[in-house]
Amino acid sequence: MSFLRQPKPQSIDDIRDWYEGVVESLVHHRAAVHNALRIGGMTEPRFVGMAAGDIDAFFVAQRNNLDQLAIMNLVASAEASLLMDFKRRVEGNFKDRLSKAYAMHHRTLPLGQKVRPPLDHGILEQLKAAGVVPAHFVSRFRDVLRLRHWIAHGRYWAQPLANRAYLPDEAYHTIATLLAALPP
Amino acid sequence: MSYGYEFSKRASVETPMTQSLTDFFRDKQQRSVEETRGIDWEGRRREWLDNLGHLYALVETVLAEPIVQGTAQISRRPRQITEDHLGTYDVEELILTVGDERVTFAPAARNVIGAAGRVDVRGERGEAMLVVQPGPRWSIVESKYPQLRTIPLDEATLADLLQGVMRA
Image (cartoon, rainbow over all chains, first blue to last red; front, top):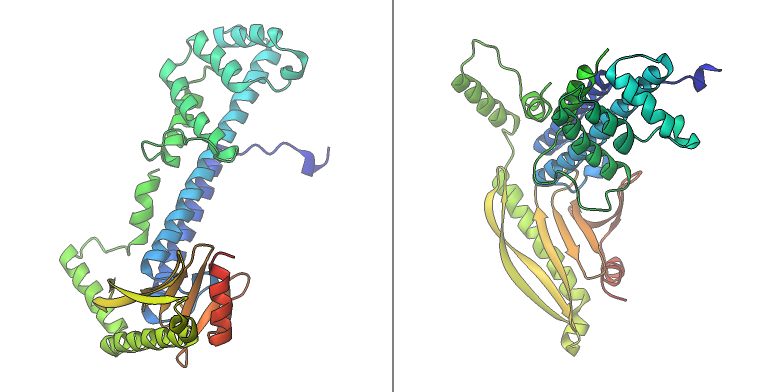
């Protein structure tokens, strides 16, 4: 297998580092554009004609999009971790409660789903039913999973968790808490 | 990790722990004054209002015939703009009415990036942006990507602009 075809799992910490770097870039860019407005300098053509409020609105929108993409990436990383953990337990034939539950569930899956079992109505169901992690860890992860689906599938239905600001910070902690709670 | 918080925190200039907030604000204020020292804000505002007057005069000239014939009406609506350094000042929006359709020439701001003022033209089918470029002269912003393209505003381009933002 060539290097290009190797799996490249991205950890939630990798994503956090990327996110913080881009946030820093946005902050610097916003400051540079405001500076250009203040002292009359020139900047990228997209900003021509923008007043202070327009510049702020532009960067708020950029930040919101970045936040949502970061959340999507964080959840995608968590999905990969949960799937790899599922596979490890099933293939390892471990005897702990979660591994047994996963193995039993794996046997019920149709052939096509054995390689990539469903997450929400599969792995997460088993994880919750096994009682090895607090149930609210799973339900909080399901909340952010719904947000990830909304972002990844084009946001064409009402936004989940729209009644409050859901930031990457919260997604990171929700995911980190769930992953850390998984039994060895 | 504290993302939402970090954004605003990082946007600010880091202060030495020993510097009091009062000193920090005083320095900021002083720097702001120094940066913009020598800028005749009152003159800029006056020039901006003059340019608005020239724009509206051009529109009225171009539309003189339809106005006389009664196929188009022009009215003005007062509003206020508030900008840093310029304060709050009065401007007028120019409203062109043709039948049941309106096109509004709405001054946005004097202090904008890369120009000496902006007016948004809003019709029922589209919008356009006019900016004051060195000269001073009014230009239509045709596109910003990948490069800025503007065309001078004159009778012909204004007619094209109006047809572009109005219903077909």
